[in-house]
Length: 211
Ligand SMILES: *[C@@H]1O[C@H](CO)[C@@H](O)[C@H](O)[C@H]1NC(C)=O
Ligand SMILES: *[C@@H]1O[C@H](CO)[C@@H](O)[C@H](O)[C@H]1NC(C)=O
Image (cartoon, rainbow, N blue to C red; front, top):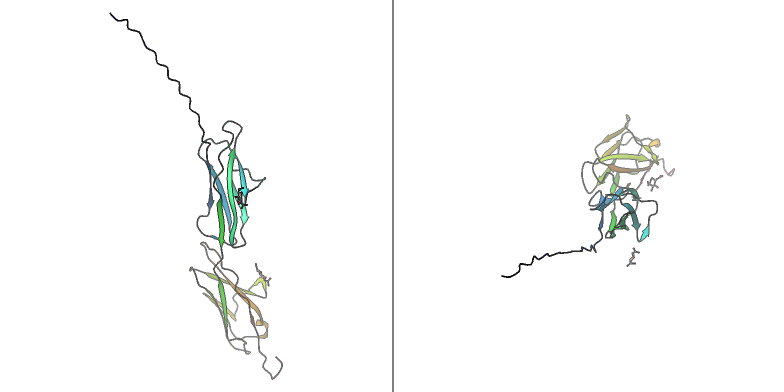
């Protein structure tokens, strides 16, 4: 008779986690960003919630930015690549840091271009002059008309009619002389065009050589 010897198997498994949680960075709005827009960057780390975030712009830390979501980080006014952004997390408990995210490249597209056409120019007294603002891309533009300064928007009057993309000045007078430009606006992105090249309207007095 064999002695049945009870066997006890003890398995001891030590799990060593070598992988730190990984951060990922995302940007909103998605897709093309337009000059003048502001973006929001968000740092996501799938595990734990008590992270303090560190942000980098072109490899430099942004010391004042420590939250998960960074808004208004770049009031975008230029076009082309504006920077590389990445984030990482830090916490007091272990793991005390995350792997940094990949660099996210932010680049900005130019606004659609507005073009102003004035006909006729120069203008003879009493004539009707038509200013047409055109934008080659997207639709649903509304147009704003400026005269001589960005603070002076041409509004409707008995002699000034705004219809669609056209500003019509009837019975042209000397006071209509000046520099005009236009800009398109709409509700969806891109929300505006660039400002058109200004066009000078010359009121021709046309009494010989007075010009
Ligand atoms: C950031 O640093 C890495 C490694 O140090 C380097 O290869 C890269 O060119 C740097 N990027 C910028 C935008 O300075
Ligand atoms: C109007 O504003 C644009 C940019 O916002 C600027 O480039 C332009 O010089 C301004 N025009 C005048 C007459 O102030």
